[in-house]
Structure formats: structure tokens, C-alpha cells
Length: 344
Image (cartoon, rainbow, N blue to C red):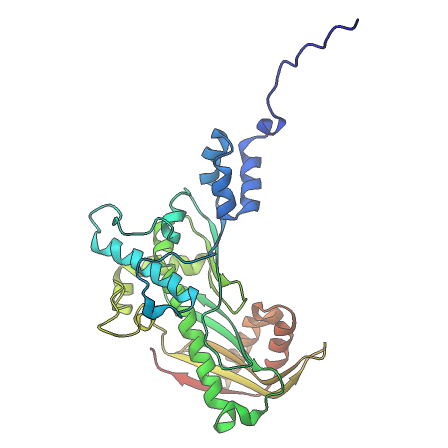
């Protein structure tokens, strides 16, 4: 009769033999915060390594807010989410010398991210877009921020056989301006939303705020984040006069709780009917490139420099994928006209 084999000297899991840097690389590739938080319960080692993850994705599935009311039952979940963040900031300002206000939700983005030690790259995915558009209208936008708006590319169009006459008076100019202003407001609200996150995470090098519907995206790169940190102490409070979350006495909250949009120049290009390679037709297709006012456009040389700046900004589709990128590439070569808008 054969004797049983002796037990192995080392019964540890082979996964435990992996060095910490490899485990951290795996955790960074997972990135999803909800999954990472669950990983903390796997073992003591995971519990100590997960907070060291530096590349994170925060998906907002539902909104938890203590400032909602029945009157706002039809408000979009994105706006409600932003309101919860504003409430958190309000509590921190009111109690700057104390610990976190007991009413602050433990599920706010800033609170969740405090469980991680040195975040370098962060992506926040909101459950839906911000814009309230007329039927069959589509608007896509991409904005880059530092202390305030640095640039914004906006693509708008109508689908479903809508003609130019359906876009409003003046050949649709009024509608196109409304699309542009709406996108800028949405972008500045998202920028305001992440103020506390940028301030608290000193190692942060890249921040993206997008939505599940791919309506718009706010980007803060390393230079933009550095610019914001250098100026927020002396300029942010004056620029966002109601940064304590007060609605200014009966006003709509998001009109006050957003980053102020500076005076801008808007280079607008338009095509009444834009046909794409896959057969898609965009009616009233509009491309708007927005930049802070004060540079270019006065002389022929400056206009040429501005044209090159626009083309560089929308290179490779301006950050838009698929048919939207193709539309941007076609519209950039169309005749343009310049509009100027004061800060708001």
C-alpha cells in the first residue's frame, strides 16, 4: 500500500508571491472604485494596497443628496448629484476649523476619494448628460479647464429630416447660440463640481468628468490643475461669488454654483446639410470653437494664427469618436464667422 504524499512545505497562494508593484498595476487597471472597495475585504494585504491605487474611475450610479425636495422631483440626476457636492463644500466652508460636518454624506465623491492616498488620474462618470434640448437636437462638447475655461469644442445638429427653417429665426443662428451657451454652462457646472476634489488630492495630474450618454466631457490636465491650484486662493472665491452653496435668495442654484465663464470668442462654422461617409445626414450641423477673448482675430496674421489654433484643437476629430469626429473634420474647413460674448 502506497503511503500518502507529505503535505507541501508552503501552502500559500501563488498570488501572494507577487510583489506589491505588480498588484498595484493590476488594481490600477481595474480602476473602478466600487470594485476596489470590495477588494479591500479580500485580505489584509489588499486592504493595505487598495488605498495606494493612483488611477481611478468613479461611476455615479445613483444620487444621494440631503438637499433634494419634492419640488425638484423632475430635476436631472446630474444636477442633483452636483447639488450634493455643493452641499458638501458648503459644510466644509461653514466649519473650516472643525471636522467634517455631520450632515455631509459619506457617499459624496470627495468623501469616497479620501479613502485613497495619492490619486494621480481620476475619471468621473455621471449617469446622464446635463442639457435640456429640443426634440431631435443633438449637442456634443469637450471643454478644457484650468482656473477657468481654456477651450471648448461644440458640435450640434438636428436629425430626423429637420430643415433649416425649423431651427428658428435668422437661419438658425439663435438656436446655435443657445446650444453654445447651454454647453458652456454645463461645462462650467462640472468644473465647479470637482473643486474640492482638485484641492484635496495634491498628486492629481489628470481629471476627466464625462457622462454615460457621451454628451460632454470636461478635461483638466496637469498644467490646468497646476494653474487652478496657483490661483484658487485669491481668485476663486471672488469669481464664484456664491461658492458657499447659497442660491442667492430664490435663484436657480446652478446659475450661481458654477465657474464663471470668461469673456470668449466663438468661431462658428455651419453646414445646412452635412452628409457623412456612412450615409448619416446631419441637418443644421454646427461646429463652435470657443476660447477666452483677448488673443487673435484683429489682423490678417492673427486670423491665420487663430485658424491654425482651431485646426490644431480639433485635430483627429477634436476628441469626438466615429461620425462625430468625421463631422468635426469636415466642418473645420467651412467658412467661419466670429462672435464675441461677455463673461457670465
